[in-house]
Image 1 (cartoon, helix red, strand yellow):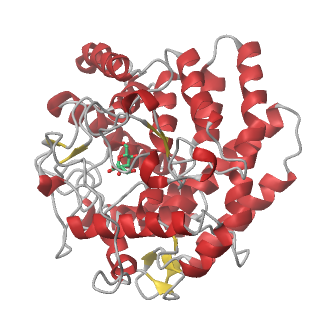
Image 2 (image 1 turned 135 degrees about the horizontal axis):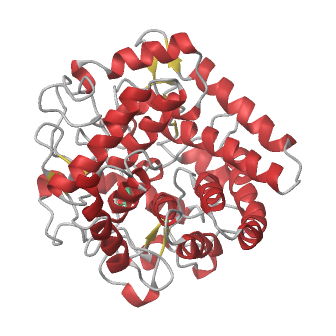
Image 3 (image 1 turned 120 degrees about the horizontal axis):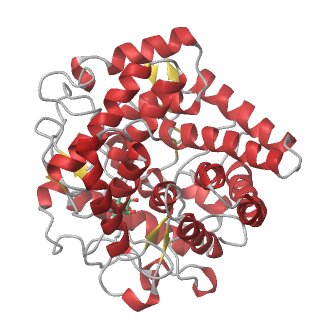
Length: 436
Ligand code: 9WN
């Protein structure tokens, strides 16, 4: 993004950020981190490619190329692409997922930022001709990916797609999922035997999801494999079906990027424009809760809004779908004690969850800490709506958190302290993007 390229204090850390990505480069993709995450993750790869776009575009293209090489025939871009040389350290791996045709992937997807990443790779490319070739190669795959979502995940054609597992949101144990997951009564269902592999990797258990969350994650995976990953059957039986405000906002913005790519390639933009319009409208009309006075996710099973003030309520700014009055309202909510008051007191950046909520946690995973990828998206949204100064504050915090506490997976929202994995790829990649 380049705002801080003259900002000397951060410069020497640029090399360190690049070293993090280098140390996580596995020859054809970048693992999110050593230890907890040896395989390739879907949205991580998009953030990572956005970082590479600034200095190593060839690698960014390979990163996305490998992810999309594992795209399912129905168009779904899987949430994990496994590395057969590194099996045994993560749970669940292909033996548990049992995907059709023995695919070495998970059976879920994740928020799509890949058109955005491709477009950035193209914009920053020095060699426009080969970059165009890359865009031409990626375009049909990106299109298939979005088509899958609208065809299979939007039963009422509302322009809003559902997620069917918390992992699909990328925010695994966000408090928002407590209610829909609670519909899975652990005393009533049978859960196959399994062993978590995330608790012996040097990250405190208090920073990771609870065992009851994992039981439910596993229950859902077991349901999908029993139903042979047949979406129509899953739609009928899955207890967790949510129109996530985060996922839909990201998808909406990705449609804009995809449309631009279509334009650059001289392809038809009609279908994409339609998706964009439908999802914009869906977010504005259906996902705004007048009762709560905020954007919320909608539980399709219970047919009601979730009630969980997470930072995702601000993501329509990133989607670019609200008018200026609504953007001011969202900004007011962001600029409050609930969400840090844009760096009030000791707070750093925007935490993932309302800091005044009873079940808010400073250190537990997606239940309160600060995540750099979310702040990177919110900074973009704020800038688009004219909140330049505030977006700069968020970007500066992204840099400061990484410099002071390392390229960590997430950060304590009061003290900043780094949490989760060390040498975390997307934290390094987005640091590079903000600085370059
Ligand atoms: C499950 C890789 C991924 C991120 C997610 C984050 C975490 C996985 C896990 O790690 O999820 O997909 O095992 O906890 O929640 O956002 O993509 O970095």
